[in-house]
Amino acid sequence: MESYILSILGGTSQGLAWAVLAIGVYVSFRILDFPDLTSEGSFALGGSVSAVCIAGLGFHPVVSLLISIAAGMAAGAITGILHTKLRIPPILSGILTMIALYSVNLDYQWLWSCSQKRQASVITFSRY
Image 1 (cartoon, rainbow, N blue to C red):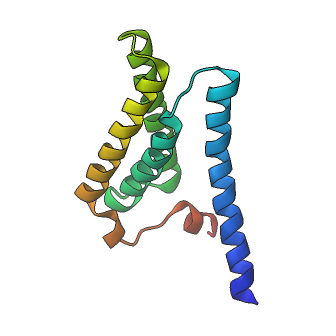
Image 2: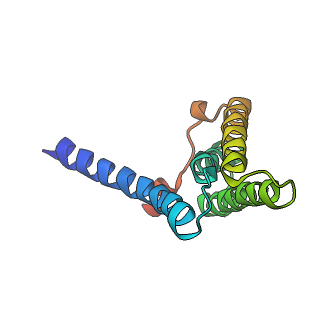
């Protein structure tokens, strides 16, 4: 019974995280009328930067969240610069940024090898 409850809690928390991504895509596609795919790449970028900051660099979990928010904002700014300054169509600038972010995430994670270290995270931080 306990594993069933943990499965429900895990699925709900993951669903809420994906809901934030879906809202970002909806806002950019429907409300702003800017087909931007950067949110899919910046979602992984935030997790990657946060993992490296916590496990690789030993930062406090809250500080790592602030840094990962800034990294996501920088990714959006890159898409905006590609569209406005270089006059690349919005869908193409979003795709270029998304593909670049996936490459950066893989390289960044491989460089620090975060999966090998056990550090405090936001979840374990909230228990104290």
